[in-house]
Structures are given as structure tokens and as C-alpha cells.
Amino acid sequence: MKQALFDFWNPLFDARGEFIAAAGNAVARARLGAWPNWSSGCLVLVGPEGCGKSRLAEAWLERSGGLALDPRRPETAAARSRPVLLEDVDRGACDEGLFHLINLAPVSGGLLMTARTAPGAWPTALPDLRSRLNALEVARIEAIDDEVLEGVLADFLRARGIRPSPDLASYLVRRIDRSVAAARDVVERLHEASGREHRPVTRALAREILDDVSENLDLFDV
Image 1 (cartoon, one colour):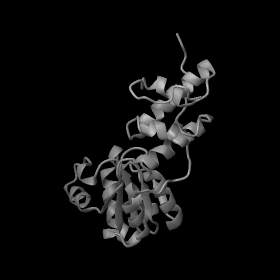
Image 2 (spheres, rainbow, N blue to C red):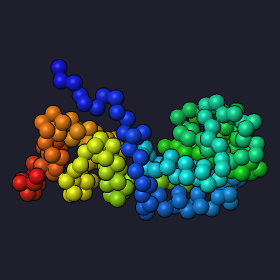
Image 3 (cartoon, rainbow, N blue to C red):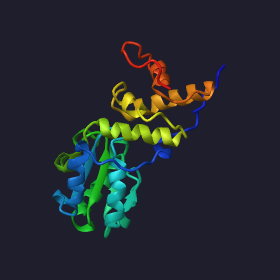
Image 4 (cartoon, helix red, strand yellow):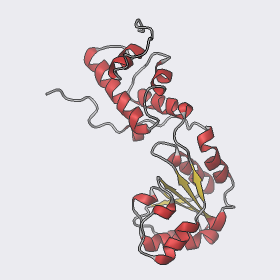
């Protein structure tokens, strides 16, 4: 049985290129720039996987001198006099700790949270926390646009040590879903095919990987 070449690679950790400022993240960048003047001292960055939430949050954390805490086990005592970052809050959080940090935010320097869903959809059994979640200020990062997706593809290709043909990223952007998962999948497939057959990573290889035979493109791409 053929062994895949990428079993132990996690591109979300290995591919860390330059953050791409684009129209889809302009609102989030503006609201982060308005810190510490957030409503009730809190802001939630909401957007899909790979849209740049963590990159923006890390930049804010450095600028604010804040403290990153685990939302499942937040050390609330450490947050009394420092801004706080909580990542992926919708994927699990301590209700009591989150309630306490939201209450502290106006005097601690601010609370920034990231999530894939809006706070109104986060599960909680605490009625008081529910009311606070519903009132949080939200900055949405829109779905990945062409510019950002091309940058994500370039990051993944570079992390894999692949030197693609110059037109490959723009070719792929027009043919895959606008998601990090789709970008990761196509780079993995290109890496496996090129490594197995020792082929250059070009549009010709990508066309075979994607079974893209319906378009009248140059069949002599190399």
C-alpha cells in the first residue's frame, strides 16, 4: 500500500508567511486599531479557519502588552491589570472564567477573543453570561478572497519546499474552494504527485490533480 508523503505535516503551524491586508479583513483591522476604545472593553474577531484571526490577535497582543490565556482554564487572577487574549472561544471555554474576564475587561485593559462563530451562538448554561455574550462587539473577517487565498497557497507551497511555476497560484485560486482546507488539500496532492513522479509543480500537474480537462488551456505548460 502506497504511503502518503504528508502524514505528519501540519501546514497551519509550518506555513507562516506575511499577513495579507485585504478588503475582507479591513473592518477587523480598523476595530483592533481602535483599542482600547471598544464597547465594554471587549472585541470578538469572528471568521473562518485561516482567515487571519490569530495573526491579527497576535499583533494586538504584542502591541498591547497583553496576556494570552487558555479559555478552558483561564487564570483570571493574572488578568486584573493586563489586557487578555482568548483564542477559539467557541471551541470550548470555562463559563465562570469567561464571565469574570468580560466583567474585568473595562478596567484590565481590554479583552480580545477569536472564534469561528458569533458569541450569540456559543453554548453556556449561565444566564448572566448569555446576556453578556449577546452584547459583545463583533468584528467579522469575511471569507477568504482571491488575494488572501493566493497568499495562503504560496505559504503552503513554500512550507512544503515546492517551487511552483509563476502562474500556478493564480491558476489554483480560480479552481478550488475559498478555504484553507481546500488550499491545504491541493498542496498536499501536488506534493505527493511531484515527489512520487519527480515532476515540476506546474499548471499541467495541477490540471491533472484537479481533473480539470474542460478548459481550453495551454497543454504544453511546463
